[in-house]
Structures are given as C-alpha cells and as structure tokens.
Length: 244
Image (cartoon, rainbow, N blue to C red; front, side, top):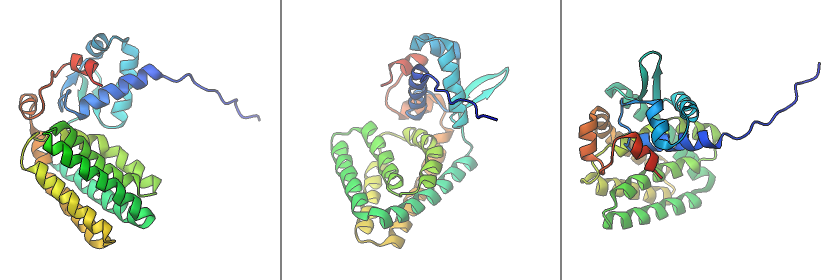
C-alpha cells in the first residue's frame, strides 16, 4: 500500500500575525490575567475576520495562555499562588540545568552574551527605560537556555517562557528590584566567567527563588492594580491592534 502523497499547506500568515500580536498583548500586560476576551471584538479592532482570531486563540490555549470554556467564553490565563510556586520551581530546575550545560558547551560565548546583556541593562537603567529593562531581564535568562545545546531543555523552557514573561511584566516598573536584579545577574556572570559551575548554579537558583514572592503578588493583582503598576496602556482590543 502506497503512502499518501505529502502535501504542503499554504502558510497561515494572517493567523501567525494575530497569534504573535495576542501573545505579546498577554505577556506585556495589555490583556489582564483572567480577563475575558471576545473573538468578535478582537477581530473588529485588528481589522481581520473572526477565523484567524479563533485559530490564534486555540493555539494560545495549547500553550496555556488562554482558557477556552464552552458556553462561558475565552479568558486570559490566571494562576493561583501555588501554581506560581510550581512554575518558578520548574523554571529553577530548567535554568540551572541549562546553565551547567551551556558552561560545558561554550562558556566563552555564554559570557559574551551575558556581558552584552548587562551592559545594555545598565544603559537602560540610566535612561529609566523600565520596559526595556524587563525585556533585557527576560533575554538574560533566555540566553542561558539558548546556549545550553540541549533541544529538550530549550523546548521545555519555551513551554513556560510566555507565562514567566507575563508575570514579570506585571511587577512594579520602577523599584529597588531593578538594581537588585542587575546586581544578581552580574554576580552570576562573574561565577560563569570563573568556571565555577556549582556556585553559578546556586546563585541562579537563589535569584529565581528571590522572585517568587513578587511573582505571586503580581499574579494576584486585579486589572486596575496591574494598570497602576505597569506602564500606561489601554487595556482593550484596540491596544492589541496597536501593539508592535
């Protein structure tokens, strides 16, 4: 029996664009945790039909970023304090493993990436670019995973990266945590440069644990409180439409 012919499906570029826009809106706080979203409103404000919006929401539900309840509607994900603790613990396991593997694979390249990130974060701090600092914080940890040379670890990390980014975006934009975060990063980089795998992993683990209480608080913020802490944004589908 012959195998069926391989067929190429036309790329769903519009769905991909809608997916990227909605994912970013969830991560950066334009759509609040637990907020109900409307296919029709999103489609109208984004200037597309409901079909790509529906397809994008289904894909986001597979990533755990939205929850689709028949007869009730579609909601942005929300997390209990226990779930925040679980995801942070999982993140700790993945990132410390990735750090060890990255140091074994190409420590010099890892140090170069992290040094560049530190320099850019320093410039963003001087410019009081709080949104840029949050992005660089995420990029610092992503660099460790990207350099680990283990596809399974990278894939597992991507399964939680958007949720971690969403929690990070809901932290107060300007506080002592900014300088503290960069100091922690700098300490980790020094240990990586010294090839001290054990201490570098321990420092990274402690840094991640240090964020747990802040992330739990961020997950419990209502829409109004989150908006007060974050950069001024319109919390509507129109804000999704204007997202870059």
